[in-house]
Length: 106
Image (cartoon, rainbow, N blue to C red):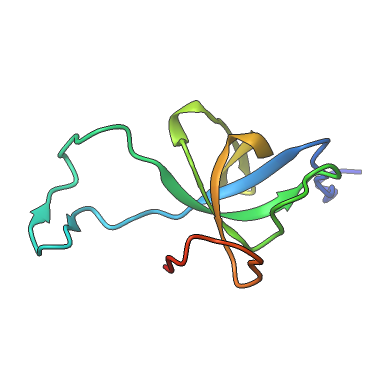
């Protein structure tokens, strides 16, 4: 059975995320341009959830999540790079269905 397509099912509390790539340079709230090469501090990354395991409770597919990119495992599926991490490694979730949150919006 060559080239058979297999469905990926994440196990336990695993989440598969595709990193949302930011533009090269950023702009601060005051309008200062920060070049892509500037190293400020450890920076968290935003990504989109593409899959969740059976025991994941707080995120769903298509949610945007905040996480530390450096501590995760990368996997390539059909030429696209994804990260696989535990749900507890997520720092925040941005979704439309919040019951309680910070009052901040993307």
